[in-house]
Length: 394
Ligand code: 3PG
Image 1 (cartoon, rainbow, N blue to C red):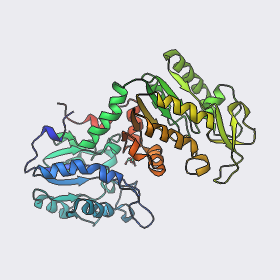
Image 2 (cartoon, rainbow, N blue to C red; image 1 turned 90 degrees about the vertical axis):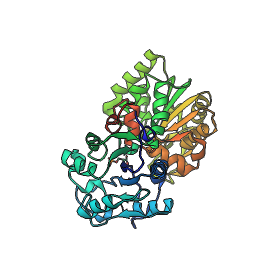
Image 3 (cartoon, protein in one colour; image 1 turned 120 degrees about the vertical axis):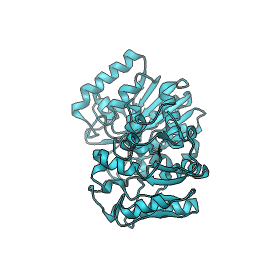
């Protein structure tokens, strides 16, 4: 795919899609600006080339109409702070109104304009050509760097590419290099670790990874459906009854492919889903009928950590237990620690596991923490990402 480095940007008006969908607290204050920071290398490069920049993003899920709760104003302010330069922003609720069009036309090289939340327009998610054309009319070239939104075929992520030359930014490239690199040509052993509560969310990922990995580690709530499929009694642990047969099929597929599928051998159980519920470590064949598993056990921590230690590539998506409760975060900590201490290429596949790694302080030890949630999952499923598919080939 072509990148910003493959085209001449001097004097151009660059229309760039970023993923500035950042978490805000009740007061509208940004609580984690990772996605803003992640867009900076591309933003700075574009400005350094003597271009002017028109940035667009969505924020949250407004109801296809202007809504002050979802204004990108806090993003404009933060961006201006971190860049140390003005970011022009029009807060009248319009995405491409006359004021914005005039501001875009008046931009000089080195200047930045941020459009209001693209989801204030109903045509955004429908990817309506008329809106894509309106957006495209503001710039001379389209730079797509919103990896986190690249699984959405929306006007601002994909549609605009019908009207402008389209290239990727450095963030997209980095995500493709790490996640794509691991999936296509991993250093082996290649180990994938999947967790989180539901098997149903991860079916596509498991299926695709079983074609690629040497070992697949399954923890978190979803492990209990697999344990049930193996005939264990799992008490009141999370169970997706209608996925037991599928779990059996996946276990059989792993065996047929020669993939080592590791499940917990012991778990931490408690009588209820509460931070201060009394925790007990039990073997998987001794889960009490009235208790639920909320984390992997100590023996399992060691088993998983040893597997990670021997790996050359590790990709992780989904926590091992209820990591929001310190008592049940130990399994997730153990996996994060083993990855941080390993010399392997270590990739965190976004979403909850990225949050866990940051919250637990293992950020620096990882080779790559994806900025995508849904996007990295779909990428790991082997799906085509519309926002990347529209980019020009070299
Ligand atoms: C995300 O946070 O995963 C992306 O910004 C996409 O947001 P969406 O799920 O609302 O499309």
